[in-house]
Figure: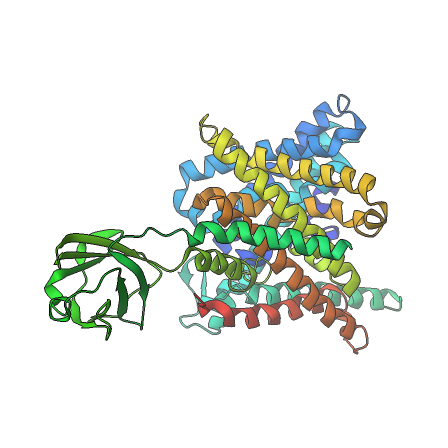
Length: 199
Length: 313
């Protein structure tokens, strides 16, 4: 439980660690896109964490990074093929980003920092927490952008009008992520002040 | 000394790219090109009768991919020296496609075919410009952001990272192209794309690391730090995937990877110039660090949207 909460709040991959920003900006135009890519990342993260954790005693320390990369690449190939077979429409929308999960810094980082030292169970929950944190981050960005850009959530028209078409444009992703990060910082500073620390 | 050598190498590389563009077939029609928006200009190798040239029924023109749709010709105007003709069409031509012109029964020549297209060199340069500005990988495709925000604090870092990245990019894209076309396709191993490409990238980085350490230790000391970061950059894996998707040939691959690397260098340099200024500015504490960097990048992205309609050749 501790590990999941850690992944979602304290070390949220998008807002706190600022890793794997590319998809956060690139395709978080709707909640659905965020959800799908989040699930893909969750799957790859959990599977590769468990795999590495299982074989950690057989990996020579000097070749550990290539081993991680190849493990991730294998699982990415799996999810890539599954998505293109069962969800061709959504897959076409996400384009190249599913394949690019292989280069996400967050997954390699978790393998290097956690999975290669800890037992299988703990690695599973850590991977799950991190993936979930990513999923929630992606969905919240998608929520803001979809609501402001097209006045809808999950494709259902909520507002009835389109407040700011600008937010659908990909370049607005930078603004939304920047503003949300500032918001998280603001909360942090606010709580620190309450506790008596000087920010 | 080193600089001259680099220049020489780049000139040779450019020449290699130019040569295939200059090879043209010769025949009855000696030269063909696009004129105004709705014109095609032809030059003949011999003199022909002006009255016969002006007959528009002798010509049929279509775009190469749909031969069934003939393009209606409005007029055919002979050149003053009667060794050429300019065809004017009723519609504006799409000069991005190859057009096929067929001539029948003109001065003893029963039929002659000419393919009109923009020169191959121009096409290659348009790929380069497109990867560099119009589809800049950082600002319009949103790739490689982790490294982008990490290394754009100072100008010197930005330059080092950009140059190392461009070199690794070109080398690994060339290798990926070779592997894809001569190993993956013949043996029907397309599904191994991701594994093979990421392996090749790691291999290239490791090789550049080892070679640079032996050949030029001074350069290694200043650039070696960035080599590790290259692997974590999505652009370096995105380019092989793009070239595999689009079935590019080698020259196109080279130009795309060069443009991707150059675009990354350009983005890093622009961003670091702003970052250096921002250190002097008064920023609210909640926006310090990454949030303000994101907002600046968003403004750059908006500016780069302006390139989207750019067409040079």
